Image (cartoon, rainbow, N blue to C red):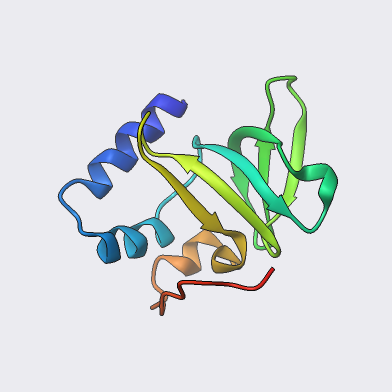
Length: 116
């Protein structure tokens, strides 16, 4: 499942500049991707790694290697996602608040920094 997502992401990002990659990533579907929680307002969530099973308006639901389902809040969380073995992107959860279906039609202004 994660390998299928990597193929999807690589195809989506192929031949795109940095700004275009950011915009495409904001509108991408993350079901099947492997997320690592880099920073979180809930310290117990830092370091959690898992495959995205579901995305809700306020959280990503991850399944871990221990076969446990974890609800990770989007707001106040920084995620790392590997597009390939050498390309890792940092995602700010507050950029992804709202449903994924709404995100695809919304226009974004990219912010280089964000407060946690």
